[in-house]
Amino acid sequence: MNRIERISLTIWRIQSFISFLIAIAIGIGAWALFHYHVIHYWHPLLKISWYGYLIVISLYWLLKNAVLLPLRYRHARYEFDKSTILLVNGGWSVEEVLIPTINVQHVNIQQGVLARKKHVCAIVLYTAGSLHRFEYISKENAEEIKRIVMNVVKKKEVMQDEDEKPLD
Image (cartoon, rainbow, N blue to C red; front, side, top):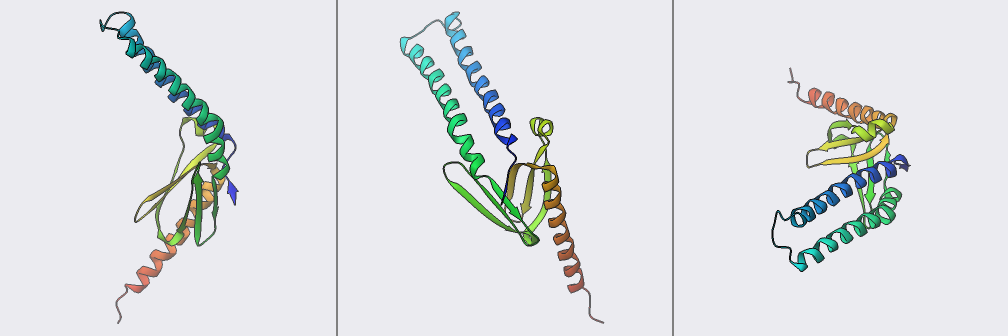
């Protein structure tokens, strides 16, 4: 089985840090409203809850970066051949999805700003029932998966066209 790229840990940590900064900015904004008397009543419970908010956000961020992201990386794997695509994701719990390539209707390759800088991408496989997104694989592997799936889809369309021909 193929692993996702190791750089995914860095990308996840950067995304987590940005979320952390936004949460802290919200907390500081709430503190500023009370401290500079925009809201005139500063109840002691509000002060305690503000400190509690900052502590909880900080602990969550540390837990996520120290435990959850390495677990997510360790479990994230994929495998593909001409007939199936296997995606394995998870942190605490692991989800395995086996997708027959004949059921895939559309394949999309996406790159965000950080992924583009780190030369990785996400592949999204659309089936009749849902979509399956798998992040941070090399661009070459994503293109190969797309090529394999599209070849299967083309063969399926040709077979359907042959079945629909009227009998003379």
